[in-house]
Image (cartoon, rainbow, N blue to C red):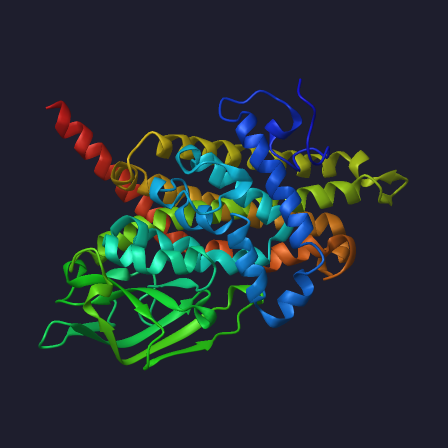
Length: 430
């Protein structure tokens, strides 16, 4: 059996870290795992509290992320286009070799070592994929070098004050000028992560009539008339949640992403990547909570025994462990399916499954954070000391449940998509 890596505490790390056989992981994944852990420890650990106070990673550190090869895989997710492979990629992995399991490992290790600062990359995670998938080559060539080098930042602007999960009913308008050279954008967006410091806003707008067919996607630079203001929310301040107002913002027509009328499809497809990313975060947060609670229960004595010697305490860990391992397996299964489908196929077939996975990830993370706080007692409520990580993760649980589609909406979506696929399969048999 290969040498174990990481924590030896039960369930603190994935089973393959301990050397157990896996159908998914081999030496190239070990290389990335080790590299990300060392990078995080060298560049982040010890700085989180200072960065949290200002709500932002320093610009020079963000640009170092680019030079060291983090921004390219963060921007592109499970597939890095070969034409952008000349940019640095984490651990020196080639663009054509990068896949969804690399993406999973990258985020798992970043969340483990730097859970709060990871929210600084959300805008890139969800804002760059539409640029990669649907934008014209000219627009890609103009914008991608700026964001992949860390010189500029991007975010996704979909949600509105009166249109959250109900994306079809967005009201922000983009009207073309008589000469066809510009769009004039008016409206409001709310809950926009990273918006306060972003230079580009990947925005779903209304270019036509009511409903999905009237929606388009427009990349809006920080132009006159675009006014962001920060929204203070619970959890980490590093997400820089923003309210954005557009007042007669004049956007060049070449900043249209894809085709007019395609915005709803692009938006729905992009949600799948965001929801999977949220599941990654929920899984690692759950492992951190369990690890710290386990460490405490092995040394804390009550009623003449350590807590872990109490059957009721072991019972709690058993319930936490089965949910963590189940979530790990579901995530890996979905990644494997995505690796064996085109982007279009994955969007069509796996949208419902991804929605349900995201729901399950939030439920698991909430359960484990709650149980871990109970086991820690008062320590689980303190922002310093042995319970600090559990307290921080528990406080941020709503950010795993609400963004990317609320729980109730996604449960309904998952069932509707399953019924749709079932009807299609039945029709194909006739």
